[in-house]
Length: 413
Ligand code: ASP
Ligand code: MG
Image 1 (cartoon, rainbow, N blue to C red):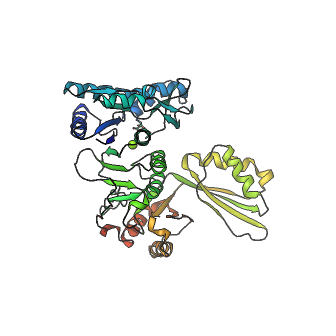
Image 2 (tube, rainbow, N blue to C red):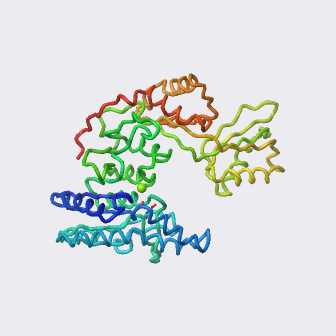
Image 3 (cartoon, rainbow, N blue to C red):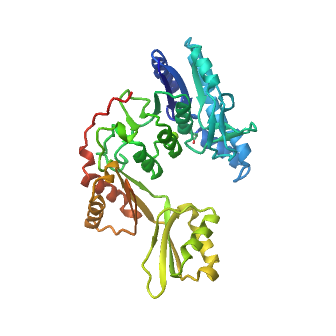
C-alpha cells in the first residue's frame, strides 16, 4: 500500500459543501493508499485575518501575525477531520507543532528545515487518515511560524519528500498547468507533463499554480507532483524529472508578469566596480533586482537599466539618487508601465533559433524589446505593458502551442 499526499487549496475547501467533496476524494483514495491530507485556509480567510490585524497597524508584529494566520488552516483541518469522523472514517489532525514541521525563525516567511515523520507514520500505520494544516511550522524554541503566501504547497511537497510518498497531488480550482494564461489566450492547452525546471521558471515568472519553494523541494527530492482539479475528475499536469519524459517540448509555455518596473541610470562613469557599487546599495536597501542590462560605453560613460518589483521602484530610485557623490551618474528614470513576457521550454537546451523566432514575431507586431534576459530554458523580454496580451497571443501561436497533443509519460509510478 503506497502513501499519497493530497493537498487541497483555498477554493477547494472554500465551503462546507466543498469540504464534503474533498472528503469524497480522500475516502476513495484511502481505500487503496495511506493518505496524508494537507489543507489551506478556506478561500479569503488568510486575507481576512491580515485585514483584522491591519485594523490596528499596517505593520503588525510578525510573531503575532503568524499566530493569527495559522488560525485559517487550523480551522480547515479541524472541520475536515470532524467531517471524516462523522462518516465513520478514522481521521486525525496534526498541527505543524505536533508533526513537527521545524522551520527557521523568519516569521511570515520561514523555511522548512526538518520534518519528523514518526508521529504521522504511527497513526498512518494504525489506519488513520492524517490531516495537516499547510503553511505553518514551529521553530526549535516552539515559536509558531508561517511559510509565506501560498505556503501550503510547500508543506505538502515537503511532507511528501519526508514520508517518501509515491505522489503529491495538488488539488486546485484549475485543471492543471496551461501553456499560457487561458484568460488571455482561450486556445491555451493543458500540459500533460512538465519538468521541475520548467515549472520553476513558470512559477517564478507569474503562473500562480504552485509556490516556487514547493517546486524547489519537489526537484531536490524528486517528488512526482500532480497538479489537478478538485471539481473535475480528469488527469492534470505531472511535474517530473526530465529523465522521466519521452521527449521535451522546445517551447512549453508563455508567461508574463506585470509586477516589475524598469529603472535606467544614465551616464555612469564606466569604471571597474561601478556596477558592484550600484547594486550593493540597492541590495542593502532590501530591493530585489531581476533583469540587468548595461549599455556599451560611450565617451567613458554608460547607462545601466534594471528591473525591480513595482512596489520598490521609488525606494530604489531614492537609493540611487542618494549615492550621486559616489556613482556620479546622470538622470535616473523609472518606468512602471512595463511587462516581462517569457518563453519557456526544456527543449531550448538543445534547439537553436528560439530567441530569433521570438524577436522576429514581436518585431512583426511592432513591439519594441526594451530588455532581454535568458537562462538555459527561458527567454524573457521586457516590453511596454500595453503590448502584454498581444505578445502572449502571437508567441503562443507562433510556437504552435495551441496544437500540442497530450503526450505519453513514461511509466514512472
Ligand atoms: N492560506 C495561505 C495563503 O492564503 C497559504 C496557502 O493557502 O497556501 O497564502
Ligand atoms: Mg496556492
